[in-house]
Amino acid sequence: MSNKSLSVSRREFGLSLGALSAWLPAAAEAGAASMPWAAPAQVKKIYLAVPQPTWPKPTLDVNQEKAEVETRLAELERKHPGLVNFAGGELVRTPEDAQACVKGLPDVDAVLIIDLTSGTGGMLRVLSEIQQPTLLFARPYSGWSYVDVAAWAQGGKKADLLSTSEYGDLDPYMRIFYTIHHLRRSKVLVVSPGAERSQTAPAFSQYYGTTFGFPSYKEVKAAFEAADAAQATKAAEEFTRGALKVVEPSRKDIQDALRFYLGVVNLLKDQKANAITIDCLGGFRRGDLPAYPCVAWSKLNDAGFYGVCEGDLLSTVTQLLLTSFTGKPGFVTDPVFDTSRNEIIHAHCVSATAMHGLGGPTSPYIIRSHMEDNKGVSMQVLVPVGDTVTVGKFLNPKKFVFSTGEVVGNVDFDRGCRTKFRTRVTDARKLLENFTGGLHRVVVYGDYAASLRQMSRLMGFELVREC
Image 1: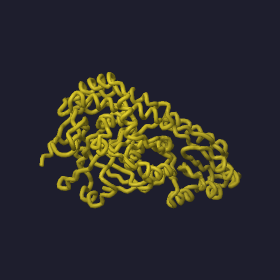
Image 2: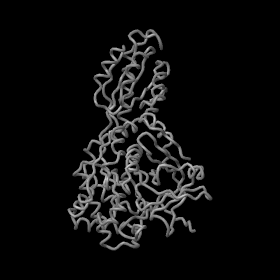
Image 3: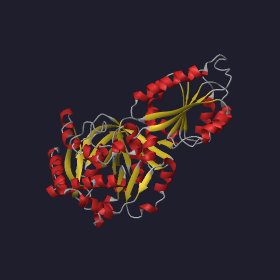
Image 4: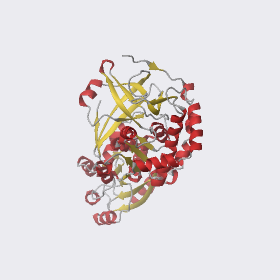
């Protein structure tokens, strides 16, 4: 069995940038810049201090202490433009103040509690009623609020805590706050027979606030037919010029693939959605789809939208989480195990190309057919080698599995999906023995093990490392 690797030079890595970036404006026309999922997270600040401090010292000037923290948080907000808007900043000094704060809490994405003195336990017992994800920021010699908030997190509340003198330790939470907002405000379109009867969408909606819509195949086909054929032809020509080569697809196949992309962009715009997943294999086999969506999904993922394979709602929400946090496109793969080499090969006929960041340099690609039936159009993407990738998936709203690996080579072989790359992992046998939750996993470039742990606590899901 061949396992030949393809190497990618820096020059080749940038070859397709011009061609693929031509469609970023088209996707942007779906309204991302002005739609709610792209807005900054709204985070409520609450300061805690007893009326007469003892610890950290009886002469503490609480108002001055608060003003110093306010200045540093404003700097943090400016450091991360577009991610977070801090609001509020009430000084809570009694349990009664805390009760009024809870009752008057606006519709925010998260809450940041800053303790200034000891003796805040009574206030925190009241604040434990807050339903939003809550982060405690405690500096050394401030107070003992971490005792209560640690218990919140251990008890299953969406909560995390920092006890540090370094304000920079808040940096990762700026993107986590944004991710919380992104999931709350995103809308996912699911096109699959009986999808509206599944309990998966309501469960994610209840836990994270994500909205779901269920358009029909007829609506997808109508969007395809309404797309401008001349624009699709021009797009197909540029897409073809940007490729290293074309193998199986005909010119019409490529035009249809790009027309499908343009139609989906319009459908997302009409539905005010930023994500779509379709039972593509069944839909194409039944004649419900006019073209495979593989190219469309690649382009959407590169542009910060979401096109996800095979009606996989779990992988779709996983991509929402990973892309909004990392700023990099995630994409679905079918893991292939080779325990003799301690490797996992990630294979699929859809792959992102802007691996290192949305709108950034793109990987070279070959235009291929969809492997399993040799029809339509997909892309064989030659991904960057030498990077660490994070591989994960929601199994349900409260459980997320992940692993990491090093990309060691692209694979050129006539078996398996079009894009294939090898990753070396810590223990492939362990992952194989414990594999659960269905075939798909979502890949994103970078090592986010530490960040996922922080996210899991603040967002309230169990994190399980597969290897």
